[in-house]
Amino acid sequence: MTLATLDPDGRPRLSPVYYVPARHRQLYWVSSPDAHHSRNLAERPELELVIFDSTVRVGGAEALYASATARRIADDDLERVAGEAFDPSRGARAFAPEELRGDADLRLYVATMTACEVLVRGGDPVWGRGVDTRLPAEPWA
Image (cartoon, rainbow, N blue to C red; front, side):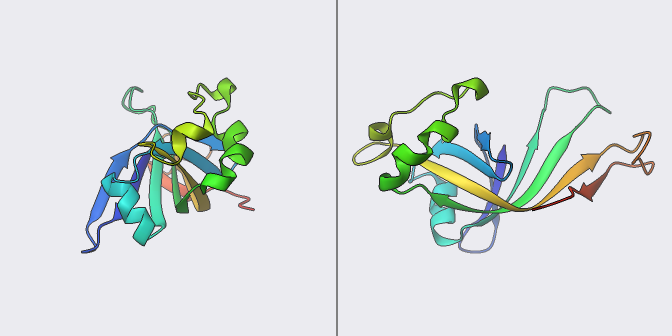
């Protein structure tokens, strides 16, 4: 997943992160609170993101674009969300809560999507329009 945050001067900052999806709208990742994107999110929690597979052939792309708000998971909430944030069936490394609080170098973050679009290839037999485009993902609830 690539996060797009805003620097204090309004310039975009792009940051790839490994993520784990949960409950259709939440996306978890682990980062240093000192990372540029983490500092941006602490000041401006709104972000844009894109999820895609960069290994597909030209013409085979699929992507999800989303608007979201993000936050760092509070130390007191780590035990409560650890099961979905580190679901082993999704290939995530299971961090223990003590690895993400106190003097630890990393913290757990979550983005909650507020709007979502999907990439539709131009040649799609149902939705294609001749050129690649984005369509809202419906229903969004």
